Length: 302
Image 1 (cartoon, rainbow, N blue to C red):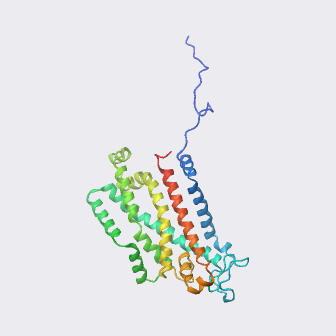
Image 2: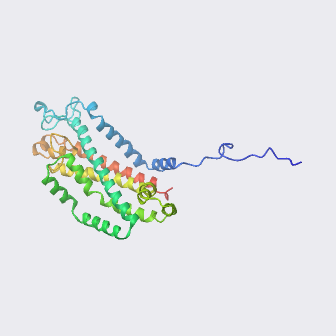
Image 3: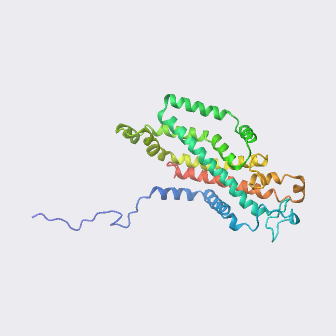
């Protein structure tokens, strides 16, 4: 008669609590991201700025477009926390509503640029050959055009406005993303899971968008985060030149343009400091978050 040893134990995370469960990809990402203190601080500050912009109608103490000539160029105080502009409008309220416009233009423009750049880069990298050559030469042509002069020309021809800025930025900011995605697809298209999908007859569109693209999302997310800061600066530059968001609709850029008046600079030097500081902080925070995401999504980093 054969006897079985009933005292044998099987080591495993369920039976032996001393064995640690393997980390999930989400936990690894969070752990790496939390190591970058600047990225964490930047993410917190960005969250505060975005929430304040979203809930601007509830937070703003005054109507941002209503003038009050009696209180024009009032210095910061209890009634007007950041003072007033040359029309007596509350600067704090205009900063909140201006943030909504500046961030809306940035996010929508980057979303459009990511869609265009990802599509062109994916097609070029996956198919290669003549398709790759044609698409990349088109990218080279777009890159060779000075973007700032193109933006100024297009905005001058058409009526300036935040909706026009979104279209223009989306059509001129996708080239770096296209090159990045193309490089990722050139690397991933020779992997085993792609070859297996081709062998069983999977459609090219499904391979591109269901199999390869999810594995290339890390660099795309990082590029999008860094591009947001660049679009905010470009919007501010065009609005400062009077070719962007038009008054009385506030944006951080046209608030700087409004503050370049000599009388304002002489009597209210604090006015241009606030929108300029917000632009600086927001762009820096986006860059910090982008660096943190790049480190967290890099499989080679510890």
